[in-house]
Length: 488
Ligand SMILES: [Zn+2]
Image (tube, rainbow, N blue to C red):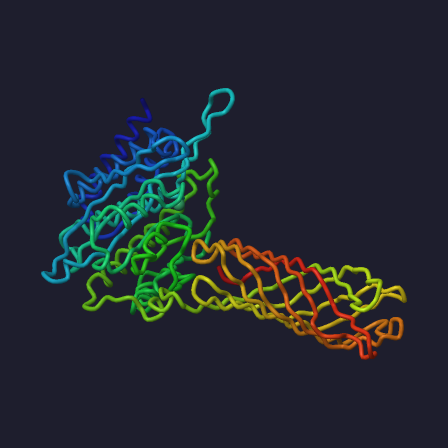
């Protein structure tokens, strides 16, 4: 009973506050109220197809309605279904809009979004539940969205362009709510959508030490406005990029050519763990983020011209160029083959390390030149040949699979290398006089998962390494590399 009273008091108090404050500024208390409801145990982690998730959905629709948002259709619910293993699962986006104030510009749209689903709960052997409350992921973003709906729903804050507010379902199993909205729902012509701001995990600004708005440089003048207002609102911007973040709902906008911006305060909460609870979030800072987001949305929504930036258009093109770099370590196994003799040398282990750069040419091809220090050799009957060398490999990666903006890839490798030995031991094994320069080709495959890249490559020298007439010795090697890329 006590709990019910305190909830009632809290509710009345916040209702009173929201009337008196008139939506000028979002408060920490308002956000905390949303998050403590959405991430409560009674909502059981807002899992797909559960009653807890239905409660969240209704809560969102009530806030939309109180804020004065209009529905597209008879209500705020946009239902869709999909197959998961053998069962059909029903899911629901919650969606509403406010009409812009300008006669012309109101035909253009801004989409503000956040996913409200989470992982649900596990049932233990003894029948008890382990609930994934999902406070930061993503009751925080949903709360931000609700407060933005209230802010823009208030008459004095109506922007020139129309704003669509959407709380997505089924994000956690693969961005399905946003995918449905963008690809199948036909609610809006995406030619007329100017940008998307998506809020996914925005509750840990202090711990993270700032706010990421990846994708903001995709809007012409977006970065300038963002920086200008960040000063005014005392917000520290950490990461601003032009490319669209692939691991959240912004990615569904990629195919439409619409700039989409991910608001994010890092993976500081207990990500995808039952401990992601409402008491951990930093509400004062979150209010600052929401007020800043409101100001930025409003400023951009009122711009006379609102277009994607040149950089964004370039990224969208099928031949878009993109640079990356990284460090790489390689285990090698190398030996010499004696093409004219009845025996072969045996392999010896070695290794190398160095720097790589990558140039993505569209989705299909990546060029990867590198520079390495290498230690290699070969074991001959007359003794072990060993050398320290400088290696310059240039590889082309042909992507067989490329997902999430190239962050998950499987590729073939075709390449060449040049090698210069600067220090050798037993170069005169059996009096053969091994040259200190070599070159050849490489063949292999590799895969990349975000910043890590693994490759498996075979190398063959095409240069005769000996100066002795009538003798042909060539290098051969296997390489297993692990690279860390500096950018995702
Ligand atoms: Zn999320």
